[in-house]
Length: 179
Ligand code: ADP
Ligand code: MN
Image (cartoon, rainbow, N blue to C red; front, top):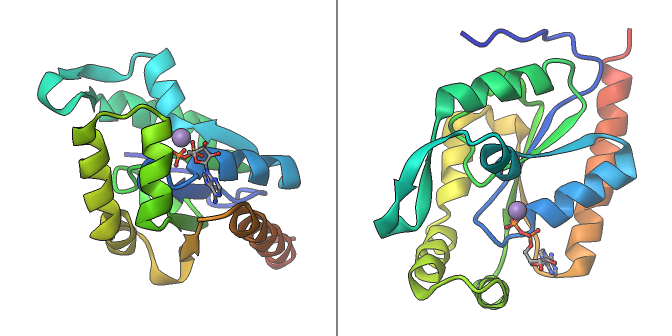
């Protein structure tokens, strides 16, 4: 049971999307621009070994969700975090004040994954995930509609305007939540 202090003095933002849509780059830019702290969930899973094993067939690790949620609960309870992860449905809804779903054109995404050296299977999987809007639909199923925002992330200009938008949102949040 993950109870959190709902009176956090700074909000938590989730940045989600298909691998390669720009979550980590955008989260770092948001952190830089706002002073919020970037939490790269994939890195935590790796460094703290929060997985239960490896699925050879899918070239992916099985998350130890309970351990991961315990770990993150501690980090997020005071607010002020930008959480970066490709999966959005495992977290309690009340953890986040804003959920950003990054979207990229298939050509941009394809080039980025080739550059990353992903194998064909992983590229195909992620391309299908993006085309079918899997993360966007999952975000809509998991969070209140008013906090889910879809953001285009094809170009550096897109990223910069996305970061500006978050800055403005944060300023408004601070005004609305000041005591
Ligand atoms: P994710 O964390 O979602 O997997 P990254 O932030 O690691 O994605 O981005 C993957 C690659 O694509 C990086 O090389 C990054 O510089 C590039 N990239 C991401 N978003 C954009 C964008 N909006 N415009 C140009 N390049 C981008
Ligand atoms: Mn990343």
